[in-house]
Picture: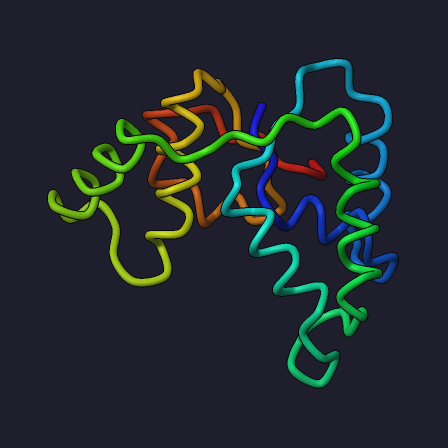
Length: 140
């Protein structure tokens, strides 16, 4: 099961409505949890970006420590030649464009690594991929 970046951010940010659901998922879900390497970059970007710029405003060393704690027991899935080909085909056939490419990349990485589910707090971003992979809402 691949976790979208917003699951990690929600686990850290107590002000988010999905905070408890994210913490519960990370601490109690017995399924194999994974994130894409893209989500590591996205989490560190959001965590270290200033609060005034819609970030969490953490100092870099603290953001890294938090990430390491959140990822304890979570596998990191990496982009492969196959996932890159899948992504390029999605773009080529007009399935995605612009910011949607980031979400399509997560789907491609999940599929290439045999993850059957993506958990996200932004289900609408992944609706277009529902015929390829199961989309599970973080908080129903």
